[in-house]
Image 1 (spheres, rainbow, N blue to C red):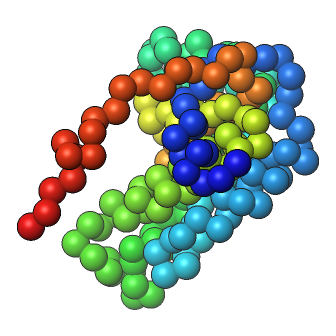
Image 2: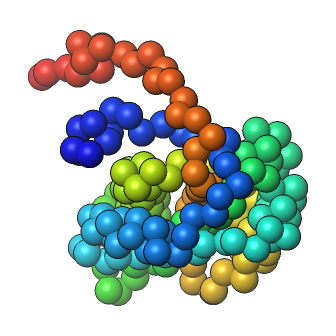
Length: 180
């Protein structure tokens, strides 16, 4: 599919079949996602694929701050991607000072680019995804054994979509673009 079609047809998918996402397909998705741009080519994003059903259940029931919609979605997923970021590299100089006025915020900017690239690559491969931001980072770190020096940027359940959701209305270009 071409890039514009991929952008326009990708949706947040929250219902999945029981068919697992193969390692081959996941590696194909990561192969594309690893080309995401990053601050000074720092490439700080890491992808942790959680396939263990007990671990997924624990994340769903104990790590999403009782947000019911995330719990339901996670319990349906065959795989959950924990998008982690190596800390204190993206947006920093070698001496540890910030490179921009954004401070630690630049890490999340790069994580967002990587998450969207991952989700577009997944959609292109026939895999549904949903980027989640409501979670207890410390609990997730504990559940998955995230290495020191990394933070959790997003939780992304993935799977073969049960159905493709319809597009929600979008604002017109004139409503979101201004010229100065």
